Structure formats: structure tokens, C-alpha cells
View (cartoon, rainbow, N blue to C red):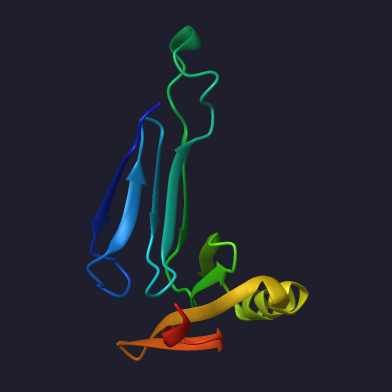
Length: 128
């Protein structure tokens, strides 16, 4: 199955390069500038079309995130995600401590008081 990836304006922070991936049965949007995320997908995919069954659509949205994190590892892999609540950053900090020797840098982007902010927890932009 193929998908399309594009960049659009984030509905939360209005940054111009939030990404969206769309395929036949789902859509995922993520803004790495504020952490906004929305996933839309069919929950009964195996049943669609059988005996006239229509798709059941579910939407999960984090429309008031605390931020987005980005972890760059020394082996050139990376991970990104949303800080959903106060516990999210604590969990991220635990993961950093467990894997510190493997990490090049960790960045948190947030959108506070209509302003984009960047905070480095490990490393800085000169080490990218």
C-alpha cells in the first residue's frame, strides 16, 4: 500500500512544515515544532465491505501538547514524539539517562505564549 507525505500548516502553532502522511485507510499528522498530533484511522478494516459493513473511523488528537521531543542517536537513528503531559517529560528524562552513552542530542520544541521555543537537554545545535 502506498502513502503520500506532505507538509502543511499546523492547526495548533501555525508553523508551515507540520507533516502529514495519508494512505487509503489512515492519516497521521505531526508537528515537530509544538507536538500537535492527529491520527485518523479505520478501526474495523478487516470487516469493511463484508455484508455492507461501513468503515468505522476513529480520531485521536493531541491539540494542546506541552511540546515535541527529538532524540538523535550516535548510530544516526532518531525518534520524535509528543509530550502529552507533565509525566511525558519525566519519562523522556528516564530514557535519556538509560541511553545517554548512545545519544548525540535531545531537543524539545514547544509553542508557548504564541512563541516557538527550543530547549536542548543533551548536546546543542552545533553538534548536529
